[in-house]
Length: 238
Image 1 (spheres, one colour):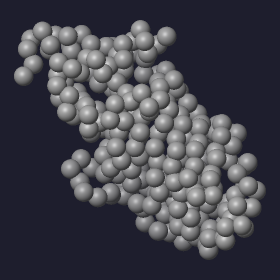
Image 2 (image 1 turned 45 degrees about the vertical axis):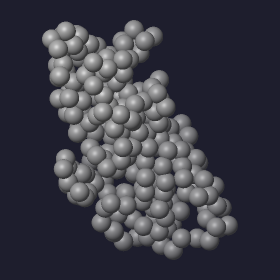
Image 3 (image 1 turned 30 degrees about the horizontal axis):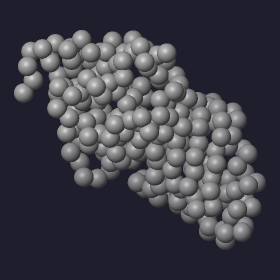
Image 4 (image 1 turned 90 degrees about the horizontal axis):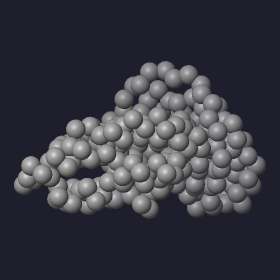
């Protein structure tokens, strides 16, 4: 049970909380849980993260929300895995299968095709997000497919996209990079189709997932110990 001194300290606490979100829960659940558990006045975030994805979620505590534009506009980096021979309406493995997938080439031919098309997925890239999105509502045991409406084409910059023979990948790009769409379009270029199988965000600007605190650990933290987990503004902004 928190005492009045602890509550006052948390009320005046400003800074960044780096959370390592597990796959399978919505980022909004993390935000609401942290705010409620530690009785915080205001908790924002520096960029959403799909329920299927794990990794870095930057939470903005109280006055840190003044710097949301800087965090939102930062570059992002991810790792993940791809499943070939599958096309879905959500561009990930949790969506409904759609037509257009072809046979997956044998290893030698696949490597040749990948090396031939990968250059088209770096630099300035136009993307169109699918209107369908896989979501997982709070308390739900499964993913649902939501219609988010039609999206216009947008331009992003991909600094690097590296796909290994085992179909693991790493990618870094500007704000707005749609990794699921990148994977879908990469599969179309290969001629066999592809869907995002797993995703982990590793960087948001200067912040890195290795410095983040697992969400499970935050859930176990006592109120008196929470302040030590928050990165002060003076350290985060230098």
